[in-house]
Length: 147
Image 1: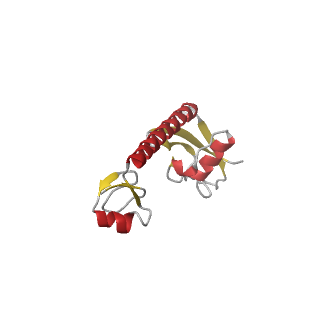
Image 2 (image 1 turned 90 degrees about the horizontal axis):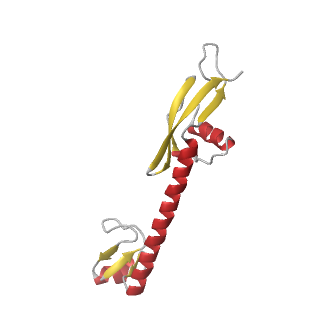
Image 3 (image 1 turned 120 degrees about the vertical axis):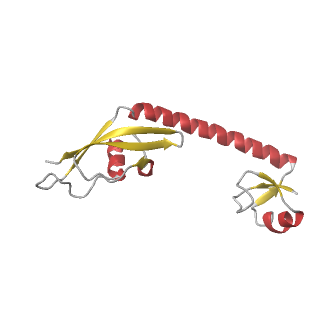
């Protein structure tokens, strides 16, 4: 029996795939638990429609990420931190600090999309921002002494 998986199933497939399984497995396990539906013509049309909508949504997200990349390309973020006598930072600059500074400049970037090690020294550092799986941008983060 052919079924369309609604969820990922270990050793069988991922959500949205059409798989051939035994009748008993489909009727007694997959379909009653809502893990899969029978691959009828109507369900196949629904699946194609969902795939098309998901593709359009992903394309729109990618375009938005490209626009944000263009804006962030030459952006420089300046963060002021307290320092000790020898110029060492108290604490460190994290992705949260960078995200807050970008937010204050009008950009919405989630902190989990900012890939960086905590910065523990003064100066200018490159920070990698992954806006979309296919779109990344590097921004300069300058850490300066707070007076």
